[in-house]
Image 1 (tube, rainbow, N blue to C red):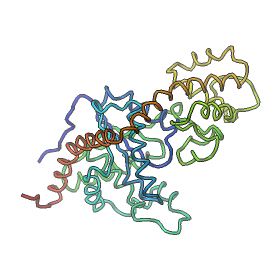
Image 2: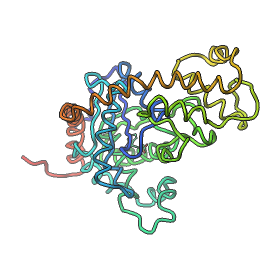
Image 3: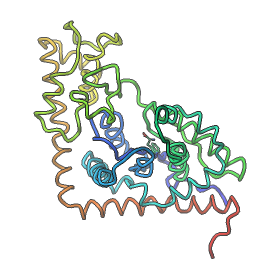
Image 4: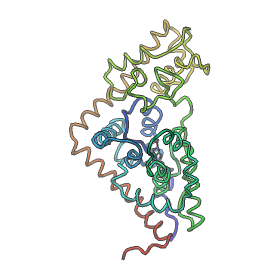
Length: 342
Ligand code: TRP
């Protein structure tokens, strides 16, 4: 058997995953979803809603079910086009759990105990699931079974992508060339949105319950306006990009404006040359955010009104994902010596 190359040898293949937990917010949109949408033509994309990962820590089944559909609807509403990209739910494609088992058996436990996210999530917990320790192997399988070249993730996932290379490399050495070893694609600092209440902390779903921390993607214009008008700034009045931690609040607002309007820093600063103070800055940033999110919110509610259609779209994605990952799983099984069913 030979290594299966990605179908499309011209476009690079991309795999990314997002957990269906918490409310998606502006940080997810700017740091991930917006770029996923923009890359749909240049690359061959697989986007996965990772519900198997979501059950590695405390969770509520009803919330998980609701959030999985909501996240799918949000991603389609943001512009993920099922004719261009594959968007699917991880548990719909059983190769992920099966491939994970085989990879478990080539992964030393000591590699997993070293993961900083595991240490962060497990310290202080009364009980830690085996799944939490195994989380990075499941993620490695997600990536390796699609022969992805690129994995766009936040900086906190860099170590997991490195581990994916280690696991894939070890499998290749033990059983012959099977996997493409992927590269993490980390958004530059400018692509990172910080908390409105604390501009030195990344805007995160984990804090989106804290008032004033985030703009949630489904917030009504009034709420968006209110959150941005309350954003923490400094006591000055200069509206310029800056690395100064004191100015992180203003820098963050300018960064949001820059990404949404797709302008160069110089042009952004010029736009605000006539602004009178931070009140003006916030009003204008709120305006572009509101207009950017308005069509997304509208499309989201249309999709959620027709759950049967949403479920159909998810089924189409799962079929496309199986087409790629099933042959790779077969190859893995063959390589480790399983007798394939006749
Ligand atoms: N662990 C990732 C996160 O929390 C989500 C994820 C799961 C993922 N599988 C993936 C990301 C595969 C990229 C590729 O952000």
